Image (cartoon, rainbow, N blue to C red):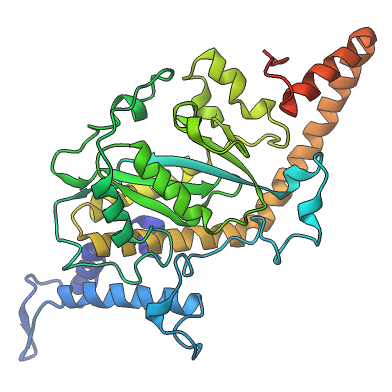
Length: 377
């Protein structure tokens, strides 16, 4: 819990215990005729194994009598979120036959972004320090992912729009002396939840190839009939070859850094069913996770992954626990805002009744994809 709340390192925790026991000096000392030595390295191993056993217990693995721990499925250890749409869990029967006006109720909002503070230097190797239950929770399966990255060519991304650093430094950002320059992540944009198998290491900036793999990996855990609303701060460049059934948008914080044409086409505020979602919740995850980089950057690859994943277990769990209070607060705010907006809207319509029908037609055609002309711009 000290790691989750205060980002306390294992070294600081162990040293504190050591000084509380004997604050006279070195790590090897004699006390009442007994020779004591440092158990720091043993403590590191013990803490890592303890965290792994706890996540297995939390997911109900290891004692079912059917599958061994080694047979854990990808993403099975991740803490799932109770509010994300899941057929057979929290959706009514016949949800897949919903009318176009109600389809947004059965849409999953996904936000993609990268975090460069979570880099890793050239320390250890995958053979000497593999992750426990590789691919079992949030990171993609490392073996398959590394094979994919070896085949991936250097990508000189051509930016036709944004000035964001994600594009400008896609191949060079902080790569000197690092085997991992950061991580890419897919999250639930509504609830700020880290998705199963939705995280992967970046080897050379924020290349499309890495994001492609991370996106495809986490999509295994999304029902095929659910509608998807996807945001990414460089979506106007990355989306060009995605399937047409996916609605691609820009998170609101980043949209003003794009051309006006992108602001018209990729705006959440103009999207049917997006409501007041800003899809910037992934930045909240980075605000806490990024601080772990100071201690995990010198770890081996497996230990680093397990440490970061343990933090995300707690993050997802806290989101589950606090969801009731969050939804009540948001509902109160939404009802008040709805009343104010309805009053303004009705007054506006009453003053210009001759224009209302034509405006409605323009908006409906734009929202349902029958027209590319944005009536809001």
